[in-house]
Image (cartoon, rainbow, N blue to C red; front, side, top):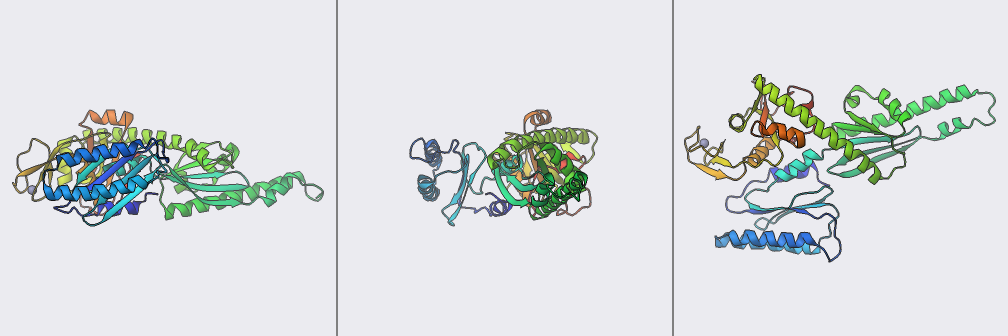
Length: 404
Ligand SMILES: [Zn+2]
């Protein structure tokens, strides 16, 4: 399972001036565990060959060949267990990191001085962690889902008294009404107990979205006993049997999560565009966003899916510029061309503890009207390590955020 700590390892890896590394994203869906149809292996070999052919420096070629050999040996033995495989390898310092992931990825192989983490960040943003409480009046289950992987945290059974209440039998001293009241109290106690555990889970492994599942009568009751901070996180309720398999729970809830993510992105872009038009701590367009980045003013970057923006970087102070710029505005030094400004921006902001949100679908189309990029700005006078509340509620959710 990929964790935020993993991301920290990759983000904080310093670029070695003379040594590049391999970053590999492979689509292995459908999983092929046999020796046949390992299409991803052929795809990888072709991409590795193509990179090698472009390397003219003999030392770099040697270094690449050593890293590629290690990757090939790993892949030949590897039996994927997910839809995607992510791998970073540098033979220079024996760095080797890989994960099978349960969500689809696009094939990509890069040979660069830094690990290419933008696709991984975007996957973590798209498939962010959410929590599910699946319960009826007798049993409760708590799950979290992150990057398409479901994890069960607990199973709570408190059936005895409730079952008894359904068949009062020969206990003539108590009326059916008394038994019903007792059963209701017991169900309430059971629900409150699972709510406490969901709250505890939120502190152990923070999540912004909560889905309630189970018979509709129970989810309704559950909704009523939730404390405010959990209630604010509820994004949907679904009818599911309490004995549903993890696969059934995953499939039913992923759809909700994805549509909630799309809706949140539409609200976020609307908010960004309106705030920028009123100069309310927000800007849109590439030039303004780069200026804000160079001045350390960005609190949250928002960019459209599949944006690949070539640009330039100052060789002395690292400031970023558009392709038309000739020299650095700060130190007047010459600029170096870079393939993808977004990748560098995302990397810097995450490292500094700011937020980044990639938007897809309708939100992405809307954002493309303003260069496909914009940002919410920090409050003036705040120290860089502090997070501040952006205008609008939707913007506080669904973004990648790693404390520096
Ligand atoms: Zn400079």
